[in-house]
Image (cartoon, each protein chain N blue to C red):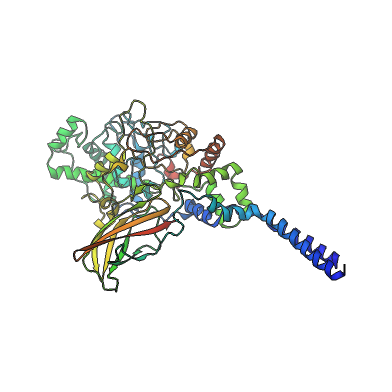
Length: 417
Length: 162
């Protein structure tokens, strides 16, 4: 009898011990749901762009791909969209400040996954991919041109392809009506020439200019983030495949992930499957060296409301109900001052330097800034000191590196045609 | 000591050992799951008894208000529309009320990221609220100020976004 109880006891202890040491998820049910939300597999299907009738037209994407890499679309003849948005650099450029025909005040943002964002640029001064694409074309320091120049280029270089997609192109050959360089730009001569044009002629040119943006957007929509080791980890977790899970991320990376969704509070703004809430936040980032104070969203929102190409404009095909973001936006208040859009963290280790003017060279500098939470040069920072140790900062960086997965797109889109 | 007593003592001893050993072994597993939320307390947590009911009576009892999202669940980072139903406490629809919308995250001290508005009276005490978007997970407040027939009252709904 005694032996029986002893045996039963030992067997029970052994069974309990075996059960206790069975591999299992280190995440609670709530944490599992949080990780699922960050997982690329939870990204919704590509949302339609009702403001762009050609958004899902494959011919427009082919055409836009050519325009994206065509350096003739610049005043110097050697700048294209691809100059700053280089496929090999995650459609970024590795610079603090973007360099076109001149130097801008901001760092290049990636194009990957921007089809999901209601706002474009650091300050959200554009509300569609196509209207974003038009900004640099008429910026004096990026492509440096003006819209008649681009309309002439299309007429001379791409007429047949353009007309097969967008229909007949007006006759721009009369240079007295359609000057070589005219548009509502900074350059006084080009602006004067533009103001001298009739409204009908201006619209004819602007229509071609808008279609350039819509073709480029049709191409850019196809550039999506690819699965990273983090995504493989979450997928294994959801499949209860603990072995694969444990082989996919290191202990440090998992610890970094735990900090990311917990103590470090990164997930407040870097949430969802693209690791950005696409909103605007003041995180007290210092003013870029030698640059004027940057008001961020506070000026971006005014530019957006006055933008001739916004969702409610005559050049957008969207109905009023499709423009909810624009109609119900917050247009004033201190919260907009010095607020910038959080970058996607997918491929973030590949896109140094960081912040809106490339103020920080490394991820470590970024994390030390968040850990310290200094006062903002303007408005109020949303940060509070985090109390992260050096070891924890290293773990967070290890985790961020596991978010690199590259681009999910047909390889033909990842090089000049 | 007879055999029966011995058996009882042995059973008790083995059971105690199993419970103690089992508890020690299980601590690392059940610990984080059940103790973590308790240890995380403090200013970051929402009130324990947060009332997340979607149908409530306004602060001064003038109206009964309920909301539903036009999406399946309240989505993260996606602009969407709610339908608000306003009745008197005895269930009669409140027609053509003036309704303003406000809200935010009390723990973060910030407001809503958009300016939602009531854009249409749908009849039968129902109102369309457009332009709601929540860009963070956690505890949100959405406040409605309702004026009808010369009287006004407010209601604050709580919701927890995951």
